Length: 489
Image (cartoon, rainbow, N blue to C red; front, side, top):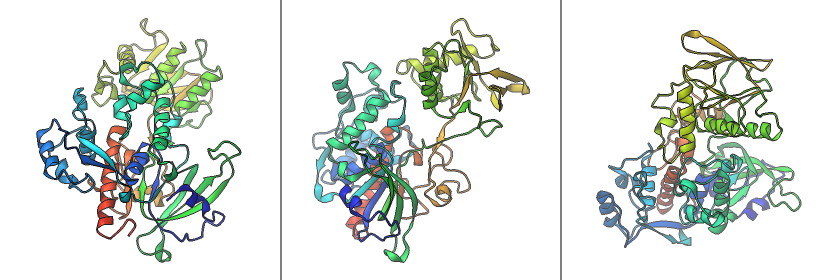
């Protein structure tokens, strides 16, 4: 399936039934969709005859059927007994095979070897709003990623080596989001996947096709931007498209819809919900040493990035968050200090400021934290009302507010925004509290056969673990194909 096939369809009428039914459509072209496309394009992992895994039990299992690829092996059996930082077992397995003992700082070679077997390729198309890489293209470009560089890489291309070709050193073995975005875009081209990607596409509807195309077939509808003159990236007019697929993979991520506090005044112009709003304020000169304070609401890494960016300008910052600084669930209490010095610095600021009232510390002039505080209301005159323990209220005069408390996926193309597919069908889909419910070893949605999900939609926020979802899905599709029940039978 090539892009020219999608372009060749009559896009004027989105009710047209295409003659071909695609085996697989992937919605989302971030690292999840890219990794799955790599596996579906005929790149197959095998146990290496010369390879050895530091886990003797896993190594013994790999040696039992070395002639079979991972796509043909019993993933549930291989996963038994493995432990890691993911709740998805295949994610732990694949991470352990790609980066053995990396959590302990080890640099063991992978016991896998990759073979290109085009006869195994499954025709598919990957739909995405922007260029390959997804949300990484929208992230602030100068901050360092949370993950180590090798944790961000995809199979077949060492990210650390690729980054070093771009700059002389890699501080702390971490990269910037701009480098990561460029890496993913380059990866698609280098691996020859570009004909599988339809960028500039927005999915507006996903539903069963019904009797018009046979049982179990999905209809994917959406809009596609035509390429503008000379830009090649799709900046022209939008036209509708319609596709039929036997299997659909949801790989949209969770950065589309910012989470909101739900308090009075949250829609006022000075209250914003995205990090890029801070960049715009800085570029416009609305924030600096002489401005009223920036209020950052939230205690995650994006909130910390906002604090760092404002502090770099010597702009005054007020920082409100609901947890205690010592709360073990606070992300800063889970990060090694040596690897993440900038986040440790923010945590140190948060710690030294607690219980100091509004008087800025001499160590961090201009910064004041408000742990265990919640926002009660935003007022039209750029004031914000905070409430701390015991009901004590504080009114702050601010220049702008950044509410950075997480985000939700945009699943508006699914009935009821996808809620029936979640662990709790009555709650909104979210990475942490209510991910999509999938079979742990196939990533097929429990309530919708033929529909798969991976990445943040199933609780995986780290690239190193979302690759396991790609393996689980590719293996399940391969088994179905071998059994004559799909995806292209």
